[in-house]
Length: 224
Image (cartoon, rainbow, N blue to C red; front, side, top):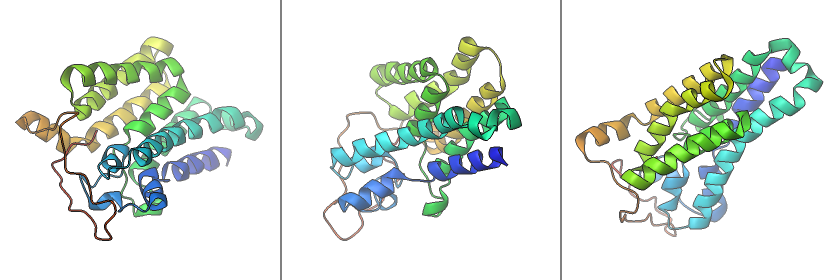
């Protein structure tokens, strides 16, 4: 029972879409209705409100970290580890990410999960999270393509986990999370292959944040 409770809690935490929550708090349009239509920090930034984008980024990252942290810290009191062992913690890590991708509170329309994955990895092992973040930064600096940086970091994350801790059940969870993240970037991959993917720093038309009418959705705009 404890295993089910922690996995369900992780999914519900992941289902808190901070792009939508923060946008409502700031009186901004729903992030599904403008830019890429992706409820994430990059798209919220198109509203022109940097503070809202930052809060979205921090919130999405923090929820990934929190779900895994709660399982590791509160699990012993609930006999979580004794009941499910390593597979339970791996399932919690996967559940919070699936919650972000398919949030029950927001019609199962979630984001791509880059910030949430970083939070999960930092909770699993701070060095694992920093390794993935470092990879993202290196690719982003040299190629100036956020989506490419996210995809490359996702590919390397399971390898970093093996290097740091050896093959284990958590490695399988990290690999599944990475595969899901790459899948969510399928349109970005198509644009990368066709040379149409946008670059970091390119000018974009921001969403009409102060208008009561939703901004036009432009699916070709880049999100990481």
